[in-house]
Image 1 (cartoon, helix red, strand yellow):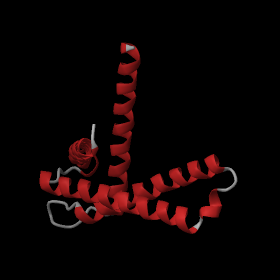
Image 2 (tube, helix red, strand yellow):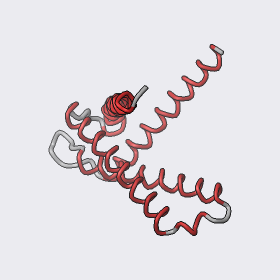
Image 3 (cartoon, rainbow, N blue to C red):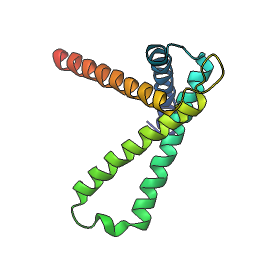
Image 4 (cartoon, one colour):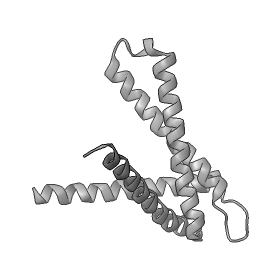
Length: 142
């Protein structure tokens, strides 16, 4: 598989991920905030949330590697694991902020950060349950 195949595979995987997040976002908005945003609004929020969190991830990771490369000299694995967990938390809150800014109630005002935080928590709970179910199915088939 060449470079073109890898790029096409990554683009396809990103598109499927955005679609899954869009559908989960519509569902969790209905559960938490008692409204369902339009598909376009949910797609825009999912896409921009993922892109913004990925940009933050890359900037913080590259900044840590280039500026503080001495940070990783001792206890490399422990510090790398801490950095990864911290980055996941930062990305979670960046995605929440994007949802709070983009998602609008039918009246036209935004849903607010706390409601967006609750929506994002429910999305991740759904994702954890779904991935756990796929793991159980995979274990039972092997």
